[in-house]
Amino acid sequence: MSFWKRWFGSSAPAQQAPGPTREIEYRGFTIRAEPFRADGGQFQTAGTISMEKNGTTRGHRFVRADRLSSADDALDFSIAKGRQIVDEQGERLFD
Image (cartoon, rainbow, N blue to C red):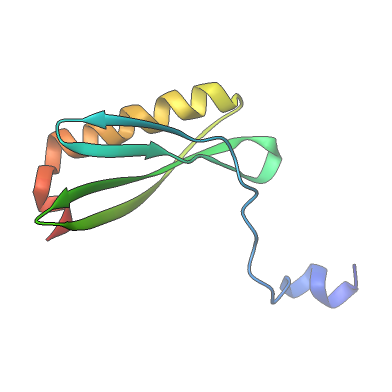
């Protein structure tokens, strides 16, 4: 890597390594845990929440700062965060 890239960083956007996924139905919403591999080999908490209403599917992507070392732990935690978001915001999530 050149001196200038190390000093100023690369101009290319960082690529997220795909990670494992898991999907559940919860209170009429579909929560899909999609943690991705972050720096240091850990998994970043992330996922999508979607809901079908009147023939239209609406979705919301969430990414949290929490990182876990195990893919299974990251899946479980992402599902838990998705449930928490649904409990707190419900359909207002899509407003």
